[in-house]
Length: 459
Image (cartoon, rainbow, N blue to C red; front, side, top):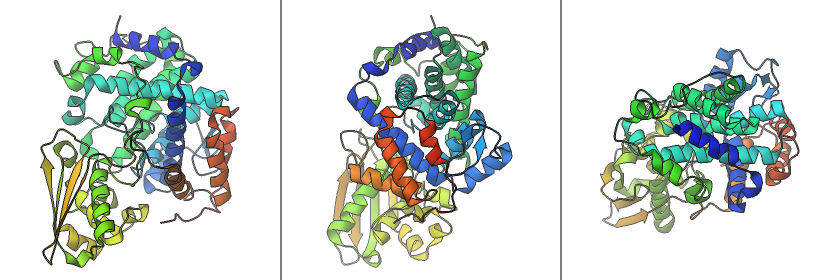
């Protein structure tokens, strides 16, 4: 029996009544946060280009294009809304996955859910099943998979989306096995494209492909049940012999559910999560010391080499590159005392004061085992020196969560870029009672509102 079959048996056995309260709670937060950032992302050029190229959105389909009154087919909606969900790099993360667990699944589930008229409970169960699938596969392949250059959100997220959609469709064990095996051939995404529009395209692509795999399996499409472990299958091709241990995937399945522990990491800042601990440390120094930007002689930042590989960008050349520039994010933290969406729009990354301060920021790797932590030392021109360490960024899992007020403020800030204040409030209320939602169409009717009354984001 291959890995796909063993996973399929576990996925199909999951029941809503067996989910712990913590899993339901965090699933609701993950779905809410993803829809919020996707609504904000719906205003980005990235999503518009994808929509135009697909030719979708002209009323030809049952599924909402987020933040508009346009409609598309389920596959096109998953692609477009999936791209929007990651366009701002503001969506949630997970430590096991080394990526973003919700964005690959939620757009596909909402698109499929509209065609099936499913309930909130159905979506939550499918979401948890997909979350467990992608993260437990990650447990067997990381961190070699991540360090080799694959983008786990896209490669592993394809399996999460396939599993979630298979669960929502009520596929059998054999059909779910096939969906996962098909997904093996549809998984892709490399880190070389971080800092470009192709990174969010990865997520639209895997959201669509996961749904596509599940729909094909329902039709009786065929695939090799040993597509994971075959000598020319996913594990040996994507990782390589001796660099994976899939017994960990099976031994730790739902023990505990990954959404419970280590759980979701909700982003405070609309930039690469690998910068967040350093930003937290810098903002703490700024709050405590009230440092004037012109009085900064130099800044030394230490983060784990795994995170520094894609965030050591002293000269970002676009707003997207600025999201992956530790130097830019830290300079903005000093100058503005916050990191907000506006810092990554237009020509904000070219701000002269920010650029001058970036030149005084030295980013180096630390050699500590905690790859989430960061240490910042600010030396001022009058000879003072201040050091702050952050072991984990705020929001990086259930043990260090953002407050409910912070989560709501983030959602309102994001959703308000596409919807009126009244619609944002109604949408938040619908999510608060999501498990009792009778049909997902009640939710998408709010998401699909015309955009004429959209509100500017609050700082």
